[in-house]
Amino acid sequence: MTQFFEQIKKHNLLKKNKVNTDVVVKMSVFDIIEFAQESKEITLYRDNYLTSELFTHAASESISASSWPCESIECRLEKSNNLAQFAAFYSDKVYIPNFITKHLIHLDSTAYPNEDIMRQRLLADLIVLQFLKPVIEEGKIVPVSFDSCCPKCFVNKMLHGESEKILKKVLSALSLRYSNEINYSVYCDDQGIYNMRMTGPEELLEHGYLAYLDTNPFPCITHDHKIQKAVKQGKEVKISRSWIEKMGIDIWLTDKPFQNAIFGLRSAQLMNSHFVTNRSLDISLANDITTDRRIRQRNSIIQDHLTSLVPFIRNISPSEILKIRKKEEDSFIRFRQALNKAINECKTINPNSFSKQDASAIYQDVLRPELSRLHQISKNAHSTLIKKTLRTAISYTAGITFGFLTGLLPKDMAVAAKALGITKIISDLTNDALSAKDATKDIQASPMYFLWEIKKEVT
Image 1 (tube, rainbow, N blue to C red):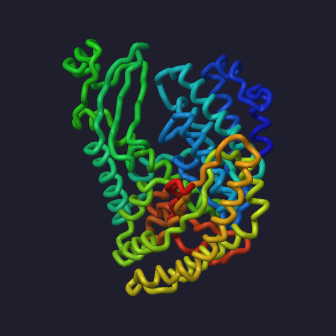
Image 2: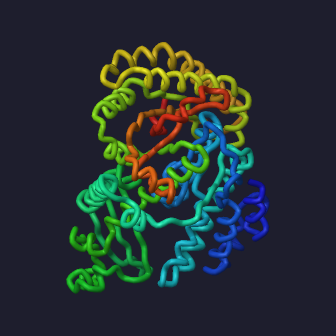
Image 3: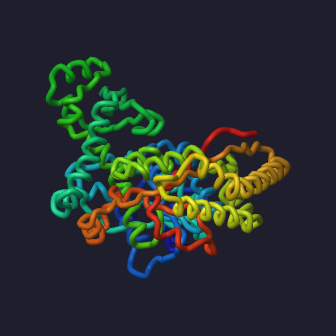
């Protein structure tokens, strides 16, 4: 990934290993788009361009520190730290969407973009990438981009029969949730920027909140005189479900996890990676498509009795994370091997007879010994960091949950997926369960989902 940062340096966007704000604030819309196009070209997947390795992951937008589903730089940097630890400790390599290429969305818009907002977003992108630089240069995290594909074309032209019905049912159900479970309101702030405020369940919105800003009034303001009058009076107005559906906001929000799913499938198919996420929404999408009751039941038992609580340390840099990984590499490999063994044992038991007792026995015999070893490593690293620095390194736990997705791809769906590389939502979350280079290799054949969630403070 040397070329990736060389491009950033070439545009004078770095100064003394920090983002050069003076240059960013002077960039025009065209400068940013040109920079994004160059970045896409550098990270674009090509046949035989990226090494295909057995045990790699493709990260969802939410876990990869992208600007979606939260643009806050504090939130993105926290996720960067989460991602760096996952990549260094529990994966051989993690592919993330190259979020610099998001700026290219303006090429498809007829409206001229807000230059200041584009600069702010690029600045945040560069800060995140500079934070992750040690892990990216180490090859543990790899930004990647693909040529664009259209989900609407996929739904309308490629899917037929039961596959089309399944996909449409899942997407319709999700859009209905965004329509019914989110509260929407609009207002105009002191700077003359129109705001749409959204609040609702955290499963649907990061932190339970999302704000959409625009220099132009939203259609509900333009065409509804009652709303328009209230907004002009400085009031915040609640928007009805009918207006949300007319403006397509529910579809727009549904398209976010769908596009995220597309990245996961294309990565899985092209680079032998497995999708990893920190959002339960992704798991819900997968389970909505999985029709086998026995598999759902087994996944539920696994989640309740086989979730591995591994150590997680906040407030440490990616460089320090890499040092811990190198020092304790054998222990992390042993854990991944144990987790792979647990997965294999779950696979060999008939879903009809898989029980809580089976899950508990696998946890006690296979996972618990290695988890104890990892927590001792974390304790030692935690003590060392406190002694060497004036800051506090707070230890948390992170939950590693896996599940099986069997029989998700009807024959015609599989053909369409192969043709367009855009069906991640159908095989949603085909991901690996933390395997090392020398770990059991038959895991890859099993379609799985993988959930990585930061849990509670333990020290």
